[in-house]
Length: 366
Image (cartoon, rainbow, N blue to C red; front, side, top):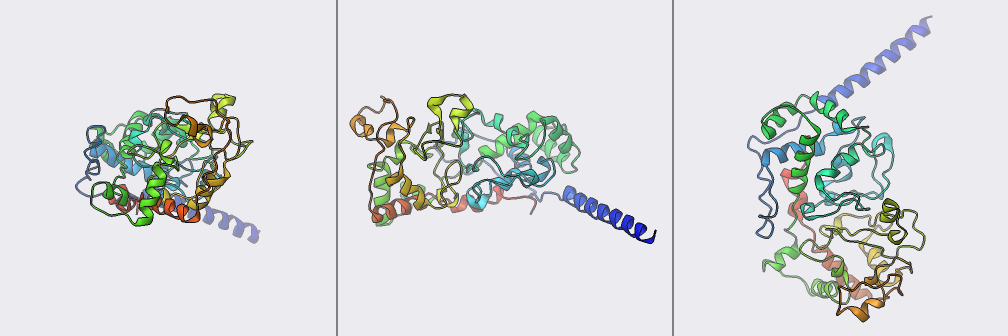
């Protein structure tokens, strides 16, 4: 009987400890400045008229982005898979979700996504606001069953009434307000202060190797044909880049149930690319050099292979609007090790150190 009492006492004590620990997590409050950050300050002249955010709304979005209350068991936040010091990517091939389960695909980096016209590796969403609840209500990623459950959780969290009132003029929590707030915060994640940006503005110089890499990137390397524009890709394009013949993950092909899209995935932007390893939809490459080696000599023949990566491209490069049938012979660029060094050096100039240390993007719970 004495042993039974001891066992019951042990169980009750354990439950109490766990409960107290959970309460401590719930009561941890964000530390915010008295005067809200200006979330439009990093937009330069090229984009200031293209997007703007409300500072109070973005502040609420920042708290939501870092809040583990947005996962069912309070174990992960959006920032768990999109970490600021990693360019808002993850350093794992597959991120850890609720119940210590792995995500299905590598976490895409976040920056300048206000200019995107498609999201996720399979491009299944075309509006930024529409993506907000998809990871939150994914049973692997954050675990909630429906947005209403999130609304109830947030409504019962002590520090949100003031934040919602500041953002929207009242304390009512709704799924739409959560979407708007997080959309504003994500839209504020602007990265245009890399060495390469400063070079283009005449405020920095590139080394000889970096200049050679820039030349290869924009000419014979064909990199800019997919990763072009001010944002260096990441907008709406998709491609099969010949990673393998039989894709375990068929990407856009699976989403559309379309064989001609099998093995095609969204083309990611390259900003802060040196920070965002591992690479590709399945995180198969751990280094930039592995990625460059793939494009240099390792492209696999595939019926859906992007024409830009085939020998056909050379024949029609003066008529880029004509896209022939895919599946041509994979190009072998055969760049030398010095040329690959130069390309890698150029890619490192795309790192924005201000971005990854910017306080207004940082974790307010620390």
